[in-house]
Image 1 (cartoon, helix red, strand yellow):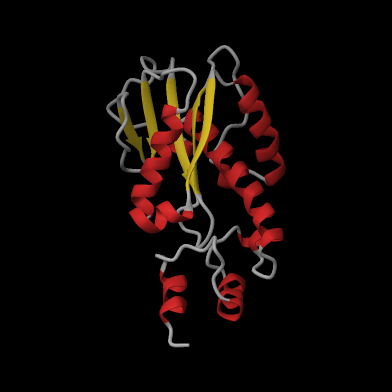
Image 2 (cartoon, helix red, strand yellow; image 1 turned 135 degrees about the vertical axis):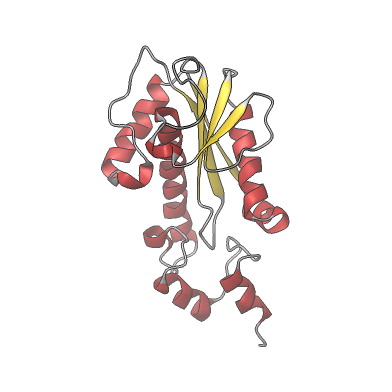
Length: 200
């Protein structure tokens, strides 16, 4: 792990932070922060995208039970459209860290940049496959957002949201052209904006 950090020194009270939902055309961006308990290890933590849905669901409950502290946060579609997706993601990460019931000594952020935080932080590229606390955060964020997209699918039928989770798949783009954008679609994202700008 090339970070210039000695992980043995920062193992205690380190918050891992990750996000899910930067790429979709609809729905919130969801973040999580997790401080793992070294006395209560969790087996099988990995990048949420590399785990089966069943495994993620099981780990979701185990992480919330065993972690020293955890918080799931978000930025809404309106915030994404107003701030842009990067700034909205940073805001949601900030909310996740600030929402922890225990103040971490350090926050390790998945990716190549950090939000403004009151605690020291460092970015870790591909952190969700290197740092267990970031992997745990990726699982909480993904399961939480996937569940929400299942619910939104029944509110906005016909778009296939439960399947693609809002990502710009062929099914989603075709439904968008046919049915038009919903209130949960991100107006600042190209395919949605192009439809709204198209002459009627």
